[in-house]
Image 1 (cartoon, one colour):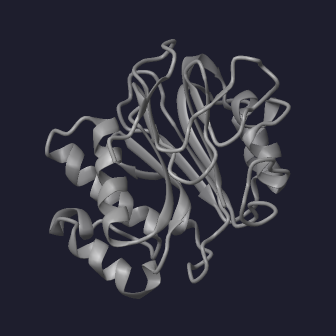
Image 2: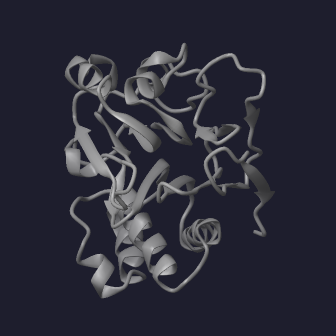
Length: 245
C-alpha cells in the first residue's frame, strides 16, 4: 500500500532520482518487494520538489501510474533539485481515485505523505480525527483521505512549535490511541526529513528515506518498526530512534 521516498542532497536531475535507479520509485511502485497489501500502486502518484532560493515547493500530482507517466518522466530530465518527496498510491478502500487524494500534500514549505491506513477512517474514526484538528487547518483539507487529516494534525503540532520528528511521533501515538492502523508518515520542508515506521517497510541510506531500497547500495538499512527517522540536513546521515510508545 503506497511507496514513498524523500531525499536531501546535491542538486541532480529529478528524472535520475525518480526513474533512474535500478529499483527507483517508478520501478518499485510496479514491482514492489516489501508490500504486504496489493501487488502494485496503480492509483496515481505525486512529487514535490524544492528550487534553490524558493521556500515553497513545486508539486505535480496525477492519477496516472508513475510507470506509465512518460510525459512527466521526460519533463523531469530538465528539473534539478536537491530536495524532494514523492509517493505512488494504492488507494485505501472507500477512498476516491482523484489527484487531490495523492501525496505529497503541501502547506507552505511542508510536504507530507502517508504509507499506510487508519482503519475505520471512513466511518466514525474519521470524524473523531477531524474533530482533533484546529478549525484553520481543517478548513484547508481538500479531499477524503486519512492522509490529509494526519497532515493537518501534524501541521497543528508544527504550528505549536513541536519539532518535526516529535510532531510525527505525537500524531502516530494519538491516532493509535483511538484506532488501529499502519502509519508510516513522511515529512520534509526541503531542509530536513522526518519519518515514522509504524507497520510498513522503511529504509534509510545516507540522507534518503524510502519504502524500499532504491538500488543495491550496501549502505541501505531497514528501520525497525516503531522507529522515528530524522535527516537533519542535506549530506547528513539519517538518525533513527525508537518511539517512546
